[in-house]
Length: 258
Figure (cartoon, one colour):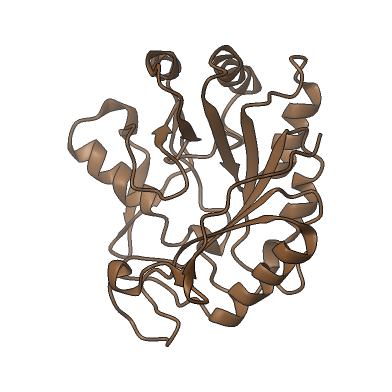
């Protein structure tokens, strides 16, 4: 898996497969269904990672470390923005710190790429970056997911991470986050949920994040409305589009906080 339709990156790279449901943002995770399909296609890496529950595929909490995949970024000679582990979470507790260090060495050895590492476990990310002796990598962006106000504490954990660029993915945004503090956060991605079980996104929730971005000098990227438009009507993701306040917001990180 390399080329991707994700608007804020160029490619995906999955040295780890498999995950666990951690919070409400995980409920309709596209990767669970994709892992089930890949297993059905005979892709060994995804075998045994999901089970069927209530008509959907659900993570079992099993992860597979794929050392063969570590060679992939070096084969891409043209610089890319690379989303690391779109099919997992690099900081899942079942991923060894030794393997995370191997991933870090690959990123250090391919400085022509920019890597975007997103986790729901920023506390473990902070633990790793605090112990990594290779220094802060200029080409590695470190982020966490925040779907509503119940998990905004992840942002405080992210501020403890040693990173050149820190970012938040407010996707799927399924509830308000309040007057969120984005101090020392370089980039915010906002998006609604898609798929047959998608939960609605509300424009005032986006307004809160946009206002925080303006106040705290954080780049704002609006990815999509998803399955629900700003008029609270259900349509296809394509029909709803990704226009917010009459324009498309594709801002990228501008400032790095060491």
